[in-house]
Every structure is written in C-alpha cells, then in structure tokens.
Image (cartoon, rainbow, N blue to C red; front, top):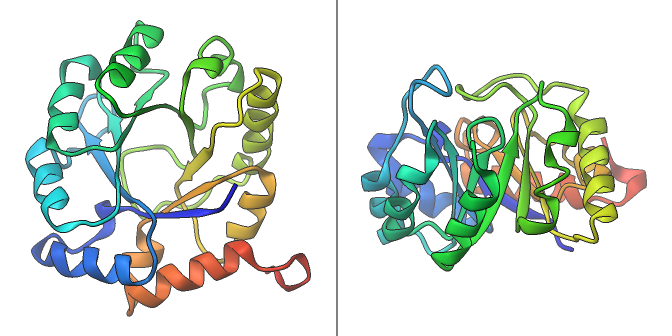
Length: 225
C-alpha cells in the first residue's frame, strides 16, 4: 500500500486558503485533512460544513474530515453534503459506534475511527472489521503544532496487529507532530496516511514541504533519518 500525504488545513493561512491548498496540491498532496472541533470534546473551536464546502470548490483531491466533536451523528450528513470523501469519528465520542460507522458508509463515503493517545488499542477490537481506516492521534487533539508522543510508534504497531488479526488491511492514518524526522519510522510501523499541518503550512515553501515529507517517508532504509 502506497504512502499518502494529507496536509492538515488547521495550520494553513485561512486568509489565503486557496493559495495554500494549491501549493499543497502542486507538491503532490493526496488528501486534504480538515479538523472539526466543537469546544467540548476538545478545548478548541474550528471549521464547520461551510468551510468544508468552500474547500471542496477549490480542491482537486479528496477531503479527509476528522470530527473531534461530541454527538457526531448529528452533523455527519452535513459534512457529507459539504463534500467530505472520508470521515473519522472518535471512539471516545461515539456512544453507538457501529451505528455511526454504518451511517457514514450508508451515505456513500469512507468511514474511519480515531483513537486518542490515552485510549487503549483494545477499544478498537469490536469495530475493527467494519471500518475503512483507523486514525491514531499521536498528540492530544485540539491544537496544532504539538510535539509527537514517542509511544505512538509502538501503538501504531499494535493497531496494525489488531487489524491484521481481524482480517482487515485498511489503512492506518497518523496525526500529530509528523515531520521528516519521524515519517519513515511511522511508515515502517504500519502507517499509510501521514497527516501534517505545521510541517507543511508553516514551512517557507509548502509545495516543497509536501515533497520533502514524501521523500522522507519513502526513503530506502539506509537513507532514513
């Protein structure tokens, strides 16, 4: 399975969003990652369906929407209508997770589950066969620019093992503190989708930053940092 790069728009310049999206796409971005926060599940507020719809009008790659919100079922349909290609909901925020995953799939898009750093991998046991992807948070969600939690690497390996035991080859996505220094190790641990915000959009040249992240992630073993 190839490595996909998903620049996180949380770190983009919202006064020049179309410019930043275009730069990321020129660099070879495979997806655009959009974090949705409600100020309850996480201590911050961010974009809603209106912004997703605006991004959809200018983006040429699929939109990866991460719902860091309580009661996600109430808003899923709005994000699908706005243009989401895949949606992740949190294990910790969904009371009836199987129902939520089925609902997302019923709307014709990919359904994933996200798991926070302090949540054990075993929380995925019963839902693993039903999801299209798993998003492992390698920072505590709510803010961009945080430092990667080192233990996340072993957690990713554990998630991959759990998925394999469930007979699932769905991709693992990682979000939080991803950069050129750890990308190759994360891929080796089992990651297929690298989400990066600050590394890309706070770089002098976001287009080049996307290319450099992919190069770092796919470098031969002897050339890895």
